[in-house]
Length: 76
Picture 1 (cartoon, rainbow, N blue to C red):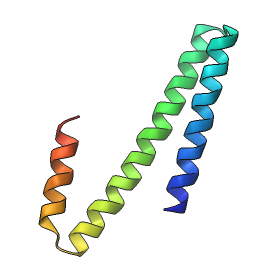
Picture 2 (picture 1 turned 180 degrees about the horizontal axis):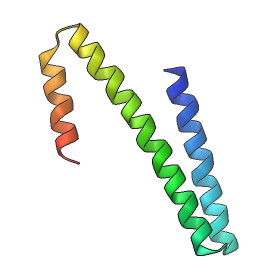
Picture 3 (picture 1 turned 45 degrees about the vertical axis):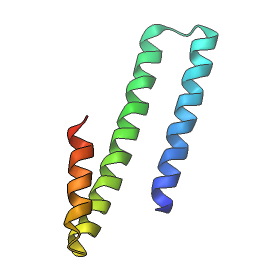
Picture 4 (picture 1 turned 90 degrees about the vertical axis):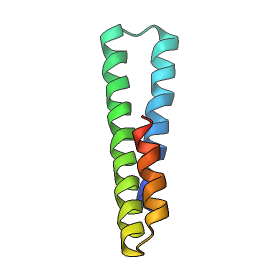
C-alpha cells in the first residue's frame, strides 16, 4: 500500500496547490484544470484500492466483504 500512500500525498499536494491558486485569485480555467487533475488522481487511486481489495476478497472467497464493497460502490 506504499504506492497508494504516495499517490494520496500527491493528491494532497494538488489540493494545497488549489487552495493557493484560489487565494491568489488565479484564472478560473487554470483552477478548473487543477481540480480535474486532482479528481482524476483521486479516482485512479480509488480504482487501484478497490481492485486490490476485491481481488484479495475473491482470493480468500470472502463473499461477505465482496457484498459489502459492492453496496458501498452502489451508493455512489
